Amino acid sequence: MINTSFSVVDIEVTEEKEIIQIAILNLDKNLKIIGEFNYYFKPKNEISPFLVNLTGITNEMLENQKSFSDLAEEIYDKLKNSSLICHGVLQDYSILKEEFLKANIYYKPKSMIDTVDLCKIFFPSLSSYKLSELAENLGINANGDYHRADTDAFVTYELLFTILKKIARFPMNNYQKIIDLLKNYSYDMYFFINNYKGIFIDNNYKEDLFIVNNISFRKIIIKSGNNISNKNLYITSIPEEKYISKCIKDSNSYTIIKNYSEYINLNFLDNIEKKYDFNTNINQLLYMKILVWIAETKQGDLSELNLDYNEKVIVDYFRAKNKKENYYYNKALEVSKSTSFLVTNYKSLLNLIIEKEYEDCNLIFDDKHIMGLEIRKLFAEEIYFKDILTELNKVYSKYNNLKIKNLRDNLEIFIKNLHEIYVKDNLSLYKDSIEIILQELATINEDFIRLNFKLIHTSKFLKKLYFILNFSNMGYYKFEIINNPNSFYLKYNNLKKEKLIINKFYNKKIYFIKNTDNILKIKKINSVKEIANSKNFSRKKLYVFNNEISKDIAYSFRNKKSSVRYKNYSYYSSFHDLYKDLEKNTNLDYICYADNSIIYYKKYIENLFDEIYEINN
Image (cartoon, rainbow, N blue to C red; front, side):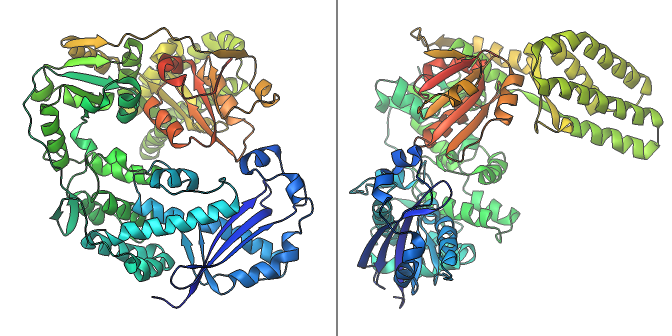
């Protein structure tokens, strides 16, 4: 045991990052509470109604309190000789440090332990790491209201013990790899875990494991059953688990089956280790998460992991290299053989329908319109204008041909003109200009043909742009960065692939679930400003626009608030990912800007949003 003390701290702050409450639990070297302190402070300005609603702290409660500076010496005395433990330690420490500096006190704890990072490592498949949701998922009793520092500090303390209990029963070979990585990721956390892992002794690890390359994987035990030939394969556009719980009455008789690439390969970690440098925190954290998860997963389905964007990029890279000879995929196939009802997603379906086990399945889709839209999304393609400029610049630098330079310059002028119309968001102006736009594009295309150079990307770009400008149902054009004309790109349908896969479906027995004609409660307004100016406290709002351009303009120039999560949902966006994101952020204010294709998913969105607005722009 190390000879040091700890302070579990939580703070509540105003929107200006001024502390209005701090709770401190002083712990001895055995992690026993030896002191509990709770302070309220009067801020310079009154706290907002939002904060009152969030914390339950009122201006009346703070009216006669002292300021933080008045009590800074007293608070510092309770923290100065200890290590700091917080749920989000870097943020809380930076605020504390600033507040102490205002009182001419330099505060630097002996070490810092972050329970958010520890939870990400040791509970890698939880959907959220918010303190309240962690407590609910892990069975921690709050004994008070969340977003009050005294309650949150106590929950953080209990959470710390929950993490240590899990570590105590963890397979030693995986633990040793984690602790080696943790030393580089955060020496403070490494030192704490390494010294306190034995505070709970539990060698009775209940999961069946097998070892590959000195890494423990959870074994899948399958109960024997009779093969069933007549199967129903349900295809959903939302996460499979949610589909089963929300849409299927007897959820115990269904099995989820996905494409083999969705399941972790036993060489997955080996491949990551060979490819990536483990001196970066992203790679270290991801590797630790997977080491924990593979010892407890019941399916080996990589989507169980809660990953950020950068981690997903790495996982998707190696997921694409997965092979059919996959332990967890083969186990899923075995389970599915004795199951009548299976559930999958659209992406997996493309590969599953060529498997012998599923060639005679009844395919059951959630909706005919959704099926068409989801297939279109699967095969959508993109071309970026910056890639066209790169191609033209390379050829020009090689041959020094002025005609290529002129073509490039004319294309840039054309895209800039299109950008000017785009940002004005004026449909009448667009309709008045479309004939001139198409004439200019035809002239550029004629110049391109006369060049007689083999420019594959430029040729494809000009053809697709012409079709999109003529036929809006072929795709759309956008600007990735609204103020940058060169961020222009095209997204469009691949009709050949769409027809090919739909024909495959219609050669099988397919059915559509009969939906009740749910009428969405949609409020029609002329501008998003109408909502901003009203006293509307709905947490989840959906803004539906009748065209992509108006939506993108409104989203780009929205009045951002740090307390709100914003989402820009387009025609080709994944509804599955949107659904998952909303479920993950249940306690956040959430505003989604969407084009009107989202209404096809009305059977799902009515329960996702508190308010739905149609913007009549």
